[in-house]
Each structure stands twice: as C-alpha cells, then as structure tokens.
Length: 104
Image (cartoon, rainbow, N blue to C red; front, side, top):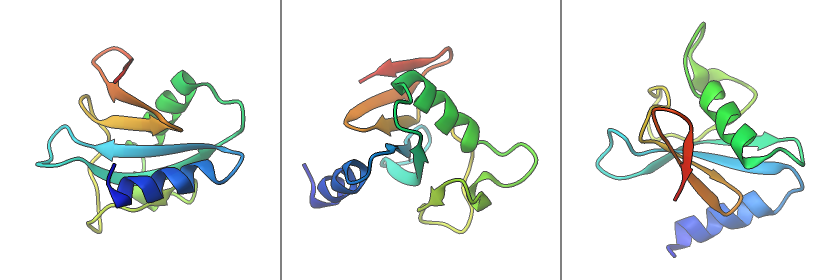
C-alpha cells in the first residue's frame, strides 16, 4: 500500500466511530479522496455507504461546506458523488452502482 493510503487507514481506525472516506473516481483520471465522515459506532457498512452518498450530494447547498463532514478535496469546490465513485468503510471498499453498492 502507499504511504498516503496507510496514513488514511490509520486515521480512520484511530477512533471508535465508524470512519468513512468518500473517493471520487467515476470521472477523474485517478481516484481522489474528497471527504471523511464519522458515523455512530455500530453503523452498518450499507448504511454508511448510503449516508456518505447522501452527505456528498448537493441538494439545497454545496455539500462540501457541511460541518457534518471533513472536506479534503483538492479543489475549492467538488462535484456530487456519483455512480462509479467509491466509499471506504473501515477496511471495506464499496463502489456505487446504479442500484446500491458493490464490495470491491
């Protein structure tokens, strides 16, 4: 694994909350982690994926300005999460499909 991924995983595992990373890869040249989200302990992977998707989609205001997550994208703004993007829940990675999530 890369040093950057190792550091990300260490950070995600360091607290009791369920740690979620949102990775945009559907339209990018290379995958890019854009958000980190803490969810309550005991949140299932499926619920974590759905919550991360909801939290990283712009509906009424720009999602990346929300105080409920940490935006770490490379730009000042960011597109919404889409089919083909990924969510890392702990050590499990899921890809967003047209209907639901697929563990990869």
